Each structure stands twice: as C-alpha cells, then as structure tokens.
Image 1 (cartoon, rainbow, N blue to C red):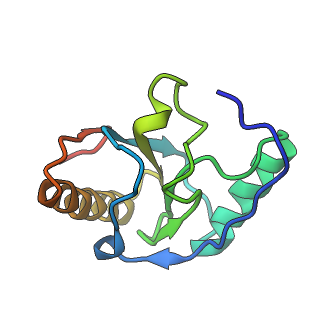
Image 2 (cartoon, rainbow, N blue to C red):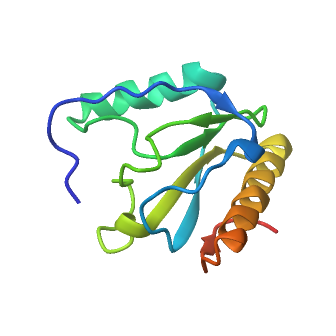
Length: 135
C-alpha cells in the first residue's frame, strides 16, 4: 500500500478510551501492534513517530492510536485515513493501535480502548475482530 504524496500533519492529542467514535468508513478489524518502549510520552512520542515516517517519505504517522509506556492513549492518523502499516488487503477496513510494551499500564490502556471500541461497534451492530489484544 502506498503512502506517497505530500506530507500530512494531524493534531495529536491524549484521549480517553471513552472518546472513541465510530469512523464513517467500514471497519472489520482492529490490530494492536507492539513496539519497544520509549522514554517519550504523550504527544512527543507521536511527534517522533511522525517525524520518522516523514523521513521514510511517507505522509506521516501510520497508526491511528499510540499508547505510551505510562498508558497514555494518543491520536495518530485520523480514523478516516487508511493505516498504511498494515497489509494492503487488510488496511482499508482496519484500525491500527501501536503500543509501547512491555508495560502493564500500556496493556491496561489497550484493553480499555478495546472495550470502548467493542461497545461502540456493538451498538452499531457491526461485527469487528480484534487482533493482538490480551483480554
């Protein structure tokens, strides 16, 4: 999947799991990707990931949510934008979460985000599978 084109920069911010809103595009799966811990927290972590993506010539951060080692959940790529770090056949209908592990706080936040997503999808009568979560 291509992520070429002019660089994009989205507003990154800390959110609560209950802030999750159903995207307009069709979602069938949510993926939790694991990454090594980083000393950076909150928006600074997402900014550093975004800058790295730009050095690769990508449009910006590839994941929709990033969870730092303290368990803070930050927005990345907007939910309406396709995640380019997943396989091309999966990405158009997926949400991607990047967690900085190992960290008990990170996993707890990931599971809280999953629970909030499950509730929203259930209310909308949408069947969504979750991958990589430990619940």
